[in-house]
Amino acid sequence: MSETLFIADLHLHPAQPATVQHFFNFLQHRAPQAEALYILGDLFEAWLGDDEDSPALAPIIKALQAVADSGTRLYFMHGNRDFLLGQVFAEHCHGELISADAHKIDLYGTPTLLMHGDTLCTRDEAYQQFRQQVRNPAWQKSFLALPLEQRRQAAQQARQQSQAATQQKAKDIMDVTPEAVDSIMQTYLVSHLIHGHTHRPAYHEFNLAGQSAYRYVVGDWHPQQAIILSCRPEAWQLETWATT
Ligand code: LP5
Ligand code: MN
Image 1 (cartoon, rainbow, N blue to C red):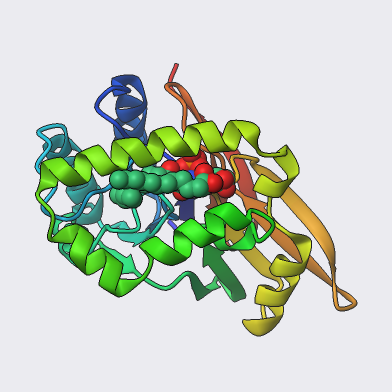
Image 2 (cartoon, rainbow, N blue to C red; image 1 turned 45 degrees about the horizontal axis):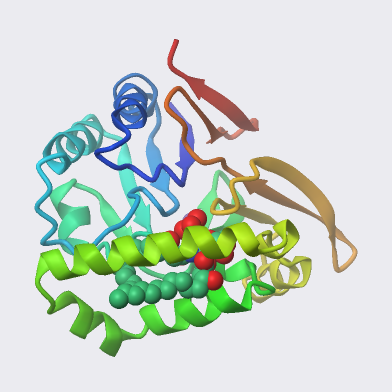
């Protein structure tokens, strides 16, 4: 079928088996109908490197492989939790890693920009500083050289600090900055943008240099509910994927 699906912010973690199960249901019953599935970052709660050896990972890889093997092209983009996800993992799942922060595709004739969305939150200066550090290739090389257990502890600490920090931040600085949206869309010459990260699923229509522009935000995943985006040549629609 001519359909492309977009999801993001699943934050899969062994401590949340119901969300993992909800994702399996999606991979088994919804994704195979599509010709492509884009995971726009934060598939995992935290990714420590492609040598990650958690036993909880095997069934997730198997389920992703099954979707890819059914004929659905599978694409991964990085989020702020799983920016260390690499080509090795993507290929293991029979998918492809898109490592750019912004990636332009032709979606049934509509040039469309795909992003995780974190780079658009430019008013969140503390986060952007953290991001700059952890996206530095030299930092990543030395982090990945640490023993897995040490990386696990660092990630746990970072998660705790992040949770404490986000509770203190004003809600609006954790949303995208309209100027950042305009600027990236003008750079890539698109009128359509799809992203996640903000956990504010919505459809926005706005004016971009005198023309109509459209921003689709997919939601984060919960044990029985997720807001995903389905794009067909005739219609784009945010839809609720629910396990009943
Ligand atoms: O993730 P979330 O939704 O809570 O908040 C994000 C931003 N936070 C992050 C940090 C990640 O959650 C951390 C987990 C990454 C795991 C990766 C693997 C290993 C890396 C190890 C790194 C040392 O992305 C949050 C935004 C929010 O989205 C909304 O956009 O506000 O940004 C922050 O909270 C950043 C803080 O303001 C400042 C930095 C805190 C982290 C400091 C790390 C120190 C680690 C020490 C380890 C020895
Ligand atoms: Mn995110």
